[in-house]
Length: 432
Image (cartoon, rainbow, N blue to C red):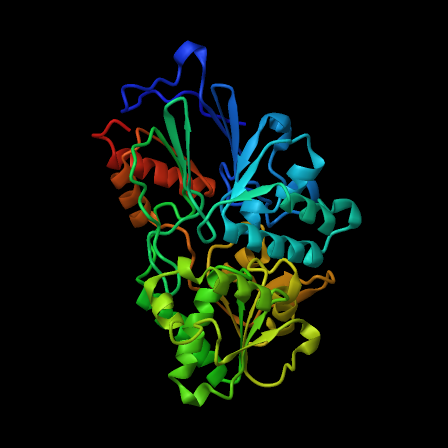
């Protein structure tokens, strides 16, 4: 497994990474040339830190974990980032099943959401008892070991060891959306930036174009008597898309008889977390909240399970997980995939190896959970509202920071390689 030794140059002349023979070592234990199981190990001057501790959504059991056998857990102080499974879901295993004895840091909101999402992950995982990485009690015990910060959800981490400053971005976006603020540009000089490369050199469509495509596909499908499945994380992009749908339905009275369901066992608890941390959201939400609760949707109803669903006539259902691996989204997909009137809208990045990634390439048939095959006749649309930076955002972010050393993580090998070459060209006249 590759690791990076001491960078060759630093702009801050008062700092050296090879002082007294020490080396700053950064080793991706996951998300090195992939998206999934984010976990980046850093060691310098006798200090060791782990950024993120996720699982790979396309795998199960031990195969989904980062490569923990490359490190000594007893020496590490992890720092956490976002709450999604690919950033946090191996933490209970790491805290309860290894020799780790250190401290764990995440934001208050991340800690609250972490417990909800991981408890749900344990319940919906279709794996044998032998492949279960941990249980509900392990999650509860891990909560006692987590220390919290004071902002909503994902956060960047800046670590200073002996005068060397390292920024770990995690997942970020420089674009403000309907409820969250854009990423803040750090106001300090850096030596190293460890940055996501999910979208490589791709550019997102303008937001208004994506919203129009999204609502047009849904309106067209239900007008033809079809159903629309939107597989999404229970938290994060789901709230953004629900705001779009609720507003669109409010502006189109002819749709008021068509139900929209938010299918997640976490619905009420997730919304409670969002309402608790309302002050961390953008001005649009804060202004609206002074008059009414923006997350008290007028046209959207919760759906706890497939047993509570009356599958008669057109409907729109947003369900987790986003990769269609299991759970409600998978059940609905299998019910609807053979009917050409129906549609599936993939609203964000999906990991290689998941069913959602497979159907974007429009295969003629897929294997169902019972082992049988089914023809895919439904329309599949990929309209990204992903909270990951595209190339324009990555480029602008790095130009503002001008770090002497850049390390790319959280990207498929091809996308990461193309981004690397473009950044080398872009910064060819800089000391980077």
